[in-house]
Length: 165
Image 1 (spheres, rainbow, N blue to C red):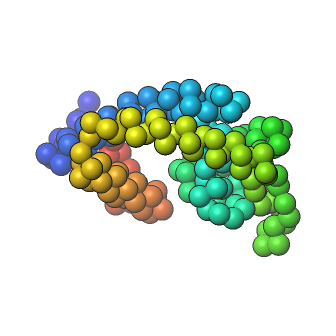
Image 2 (tube, helix red, strand yellow):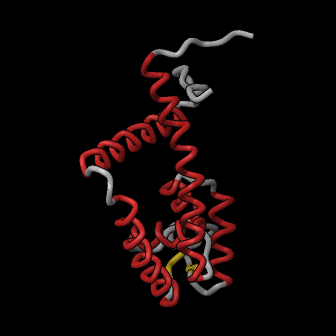
């Protein structure tokens, strides 16, 4: 078996990726707990948030791209949210087969309740952390995500496709 030797930056980036995987699992579990009183899951809350933050209706593929999710998983969440009457689909003048998804009044109310609950939770979570550290972490994660998107668009042709193995 051939192993690739990582650079010091590669080792550090691997540590970031592994901690991100761990944090992601914990964040999804916390999101499920925060969303449960509204009858939602973290995944459905994430879809509501994408639409709310866009301040306009979005298509399922647009939501998926904004959230880094698959179109299929977003479609499943949208279907459940529609069944709960939290979102509605409307005709898309630009694409007949890809309707626009918007929040309903009930969806807006549920999202606002979740935002209030999340505000209290995130303030407590961040209380012992330094603002500069949080800002740096957000910036670095954004840069890593941008690199991942760029790599995906190039089809991994730049040799980075197996960077996390």
